Image (cartoon, rainbow, N blue to C red; front, top):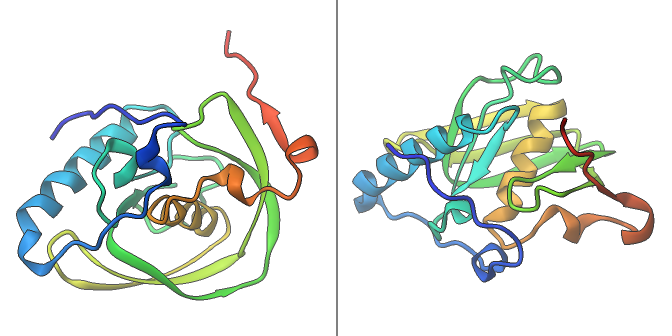
Length: 168
C-alpha cells in the first residue's frame, strides 16, 4: 500500500478512457485498490478517487462517504472494479470538487439514485444501489474512467464554476 501522487489537470491521462481489468489481474487489482484507499484517506474530506487519477489506466474506483457530513446512509467503503451504471433516476444540481482540479468547484447535474454493477478487487460480483451524496460521488468517479471531468458536465462555465476559497 502506498499513497500515490494524484494527477492534476491538464495531465493527458485524465482525459483518456481506462481499460477493464481482466480476471487474471487479481494481484494488480488488490494492489491498485489498496493504493487508492490509502491515497483517498490521505486527503481530508476526500470521499472518492479513480484509478486514472493515480496514473493507473484501469476501471477501478473507491468511494467512502461515511465520514462526510452529507454521507448519511452510505454503504461504507466501496471498492469497485469494472463498474457500470445500469439504472439511474431523478436529477439534481449540486456543487462538486475534485482532487485533480483542486482550485475549482462547480455546479453539476447528476442522477439522484444509481444502480451499479461491478466486481470486487477479489473478483466477486457486486450490485450497489445508492442514492443522494453517495450516488453523486459514484457518478463523479465513474466519469473519470471515461476521461470525463466534472467541468465537462457544467451547463455554464461563467455561472456554474467557482474558485475554491483558500483555507486559512
